[in-house]
Image 1 (spheres, rainbow, N blue to C red):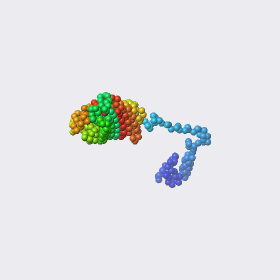
Image 2 (cartoon, rainbow, N blue to C red; image 1 turned 90 degrees about the horizontal axis):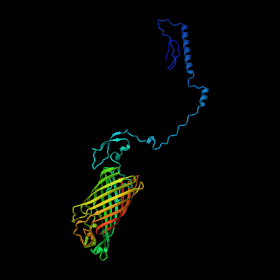
Image 3 (cartoon, helix red, strand yellow; image 1 turned 30 degrees about the horizontal axis):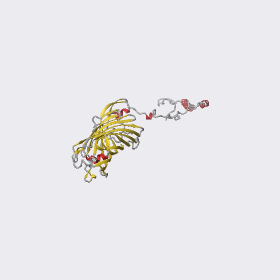
Image 4 (cartoon, one colour; image 1 turned 45 degrees about the vertical axis):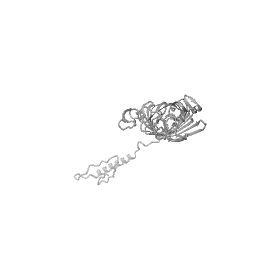
Length: 454
């Protein structure tokens, strides 16, 4: 507050627009103002205070006259806001991918080989979009899609694939049923009577059933390990010269298999991999039976659930895939090592497959397969068996060649919790058999496959 002592002036607050101009200070050395002077000063102060009050009450630029109100009333209201856009997946800003600038980036590839380490996994690559960061495009060409219904080979083919995504596990149960009826020598059928003319007992039919329990694990993109535990059931029907029917059968664990698949070449939805396995003599091959005769209780060669030797299982597999087709070719061998404790070794074997599968939908496909088999005679002999009793006891009547044609259906669950679970069925007939006989000839075979990948 400003206050002029002894003059009775009104108080003025901060913020007033005009400032009162006070007379010069009165010093003791100057004469006191006259009464007229004090009256003029007081009158001037009153006028200035009235001017300030008038200024406060004056209308501002925001005040409107009645004419202005009429003019504003005639202005139309603004238009409504436009409707919110309905974005599609193609132009929704919130869904558009954000790309890093194109250039060279340091990346780390997925594990490959058999036992990868950190060294060699880092590399530099030109990246222009997020597609370049996908493992199968950043490190190799697109692999074969195993989750398609045609992604795996028909049910009767083993070791046809590698688990390309690294770390995947596959569990599978496969079942095989083979039926044999009648005898064949070379490419021609022979009668039971002609066989009984040379042997006192002749086999008439055989059933061979095998349950395969598989476990597969792929620690890297290039390497897959496979373990197979088979359980077999063999049954042979015989007839003797007197017309008596004889049956012998056995069920047991067969030899265990330890297989590996390693990728040698990978192309545009194609690959070639090496198959290498070992079969160990865990089954029982010295079991006893009541027939062919009680005096010859040792099971004949085709009835034994082990070959008694360690076997190498080499092979090579090629696979390719397009939008709706998957095809492949495979050759597998069985090379038996040494002689078992009964003084013999089964003949080596070759198994050849060529197949093509057609995807019909995302969950079903059809397939066709050619299967060729070749096997040799037995080297040595089990001295406990009488080779003149029945043809199955003769070591030089075991070799043969066979060509089968098979057709199959494959079903897969394409999505969801059980994605990758599949069921396949395949059956076929022999179109060519050349046997070092007389031997039992095959009439048909049936395969089923139930597996899940996770």
